[in-house]
Length: 126
Image (cartoon, rainbow, N blue to C red; front, side, top):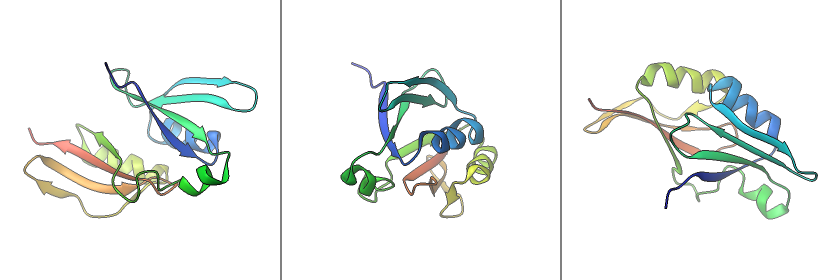
């Protein structure tokens, strides 16, 4: 087995595409109209899992936007240039929550996407 896709609830497909594709430079792998919804997937690279951008449509889904992992960091991005990608995140509308920390495993900082989800940006130690 191999993990290929995770779902991220968002309030609007196009705003999410602007953040991930236009802002962070990810690739839109699919954007297919399925009538009452769209199948929209994005990924930072072709090698790893992709993210399904799912527009919240029920009250329970709308409440879960930004808190899909119960307040824990739920998403981890690895980079080879922390400074470059932290700047992309903030320019796109994400918010760094702390100064970068130098840990034994590398440089890391928590950040929130525009909807409130917690992420880690990690540049592994060499």
